[in-house]
Image (cartoon, rainbow, N blue to C red; front, side, top):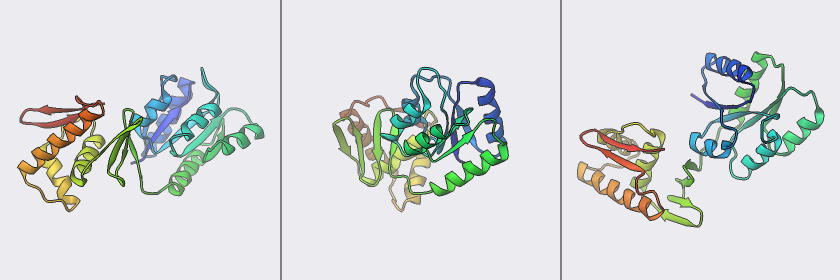
Length: 221
């Protein structure tokens, strides 16, 4: 189900939004740290962001500009101001839609659904910590460094990434490889894991993958 990040400094409003969205079947993440929002987005990879214009430390429109420098995640701006200037600026800075508080929950859900539908497209990149993961190119990239992964190594890494901080068994990894038309045996999986670890080590992520004896592997956040 789609994951929505709520960036709202009024806790009561944030909790109201969270309840409304969860009742509608969405996963939600409520921001409590407004100093690391860019990093949070990279880690959490939300499908949509509800972004309030009036935030502590930073104007929401400024934050919107910063997000748009590196991420095309759909964003709906939320504000208590009934101000056309804010609407125009938000849209010009890259917002996908705009809604004014107090909002009608039904209208908000309709707008969220419409934005998500418009934004449906293949995901061409992911993020792990400060690492950019580009499956189509088969590369992991950080700053000026990058490493090339084989198809199997990328499938394994993406599966671990989608299950961060969870134990992933060897059977699960082999099943995912088979689902991607890659048929490997247990020994080949061990070799692929070892090569993936070595490549992560090259770019400073030596301890990213932990082995749990007789259980499987964990990719740490």
